[in-house]
Image 1 (cartoon, helix red, strand yellow):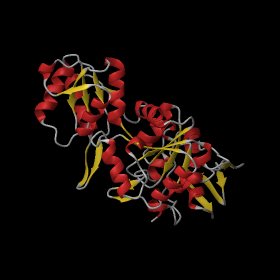
Image 2 (cartoon, rainbow, N blue to C red):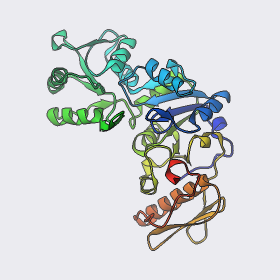
Image 3 (cartoon, one colour):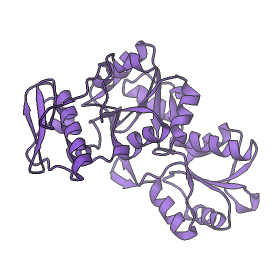
Image 4 (cartoon, one colour):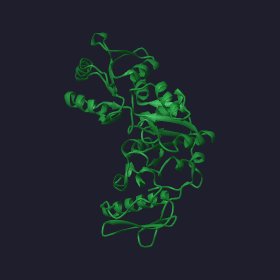
Length: 340
């Protein structure tokens, strides 16, 4: 269930770990209000990190993209799944180890930064295989990596995301390659990216902070990743999570806090309270379930509406095993893109 923070999250936590797509930007444009909210968080003294499952772009490229969108970002603020994968490999095999590379420039650079030696020929006698997204990967390189994995070499994958946003639509992500290689070899890789904890551990190691907060828009990567790493999380509704996904969230997909957008990072949070009739109330809103259908009555802020909806639905599911229908609930205006 959602939790209460009597103070703004910017003071309750000292490290803000931002997912990128759907949180900071959508496509080529910054999410409305995101640059200002991130700037305000930085001015409070929070450590700021931009955490991405993408292994295709080096941190310098990601930071330049963020800067062009009006977000204050340096390469050291960016932590990628490629860096987390490279760190895992270096810890296991040591500096100088030859690693067969099936990935793009981001993974190549991350391996070299850890003192590893990426190779693309099996004759180089690699000790492990590292895979990551690369739109220009030749099939021969993929095939050689598959043969090495099938022959027993350890395999570390940067992430297992099945989709990736592109300028021409949603395309197959690295997770599709991971599935194909697993089907061929029968081997399940060590995965560095969310929802596994390695990427978030790497972020804390690189950026610092004693009280980290993960901020994301995806339940099955950002929020589950925070759960796996034992961290608190803030879900924002500017990305892929909509009303149906929110009310049906499994316990490991439920955030600590919930807000329509990144303005929620700058605010205190009050969790809804249970009423005598089994519903939940907060800030003028009252949520309850009638004949397996969710209802919300009252008036108040959009943020409190979403919190009442989530808590009422989750409580009903946990008690009855039934996800309530949302046919009769409509987000109030001012709820960001989901309220339009």
